[in-house]
Image (tube, rainbow, N blue to C red):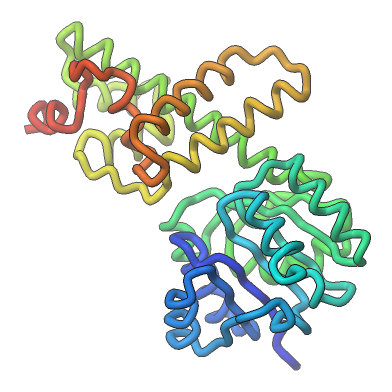
Length: 307
């Protein structure tokens, strides 16, 4: 049986281990990254081909994109030297696993459908650790059930749960709303620590109590306990990506006519953090910008209280 030919575009922090897992699963893999050196290293390490031009993707049954946003996806799939889509033949499927704006995804999908190419949006949750061990949670949206079925072997090699979220764009909407929920929990925990610090509570004591009580969350258990209190700030998830996802959630709320003051406020808070720390900062550092007078419970203060 001939191995399914799969293209993979975007070999960043998440993309590299994801593409590696596809190579290990036995797919006939073709990779592409804007960094030619990175692309060459991956191809040499994993015994696969590297793409130099869109025609190299001819024969791919599935093309996965793992890129910063839908604008970059559009550029690669439709615009780059005519676009990867120009080399694909029906019934090929493009699977966008980036954190994209669902409205942009639907626009790309309409253009691909006109060419006979299906689009599945399948963003992920779990970060680099779960990309490494292929245990990502995947949120898959599609208007074409048969196309999603054709993409499933690829998705199942990357994650241990594939949630069928509904029509095209619903996966990206779900990812943004999930990350908005996480960003809100982070902001609430950071404020609680700051208020408690001002009242004389120690951050370590607060986190221990929260994690044994009803206020616990992924953020209190993993982000604050493992990164903020220790000063590691190494979750592997960029602050800019979190701010982008929360902004997408706020955009969806506005477009839907939903009264969402919490979402609006959380989006503003993360935009402030992005402006203060820059896109590449670890998202666990966001609290540093919210109390610029230096009074916040920074890692130094937390480490002293931890000893």
